[in-house]
Image (cartoon, rainbow, N blue to C red; front, side, top):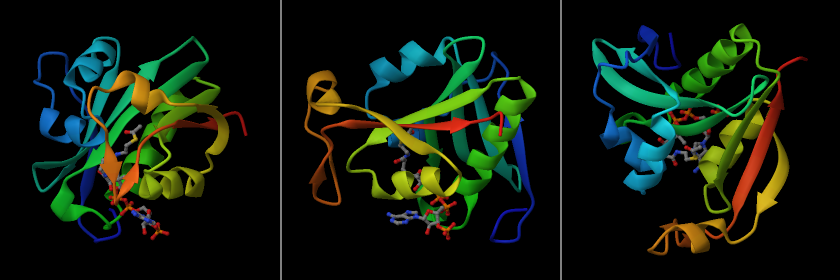
Length: 159
Ligand code: ACO
């Protein structure tokens, strides 16, 4: 169950299923970058009443560290706890897979995600300066704030 009280399921997409780009491109506007990490990642979806309502992508960095490359919720259903549901379940999956560290990178302008990740125990561990200026062809703005730097947050899964 999520906060809106409806039944939710967390499922891994099989390699045969098509990727939910309408979600993935909400979190990362570059299809080229998305396609690069999808090849090596597992894609999980949140299903509510038979409908995909969110997606989260888990990418293995090493044997002991994984990264959440992408997380997105259906825009009409934001703020109902689906993002938290995805984070909790991907943390659980990463622990089951014996990863010791889980990291996630987001823009300095992504205020909602920065709040969400810290609420779920991620700590800011690094900043990649000018990442969004150097890697995206068009300027990206969120709520009038330009995405410039990548903030890396990490959760210790051994605790
Ligand atoms: N400012 C402050 N707090 C916020 C904001 C905001 N803009 N947005 C959400 N929150 C808070 C909520 O109030 C809630 O707090 P609470 O648990 O204390 O009540 C908490 O964040 C989580 O809210 P949820 O309802 O669980 O999150 P939601 O279902 O809305 O999903 C998400 C969050 C995934 C970031 C969604 O807004 C989304 O899809 N955004 C567009 C895509 C995106 O930006 N993805 C992240 C990019 S980074 C990456 O993918 C690695």
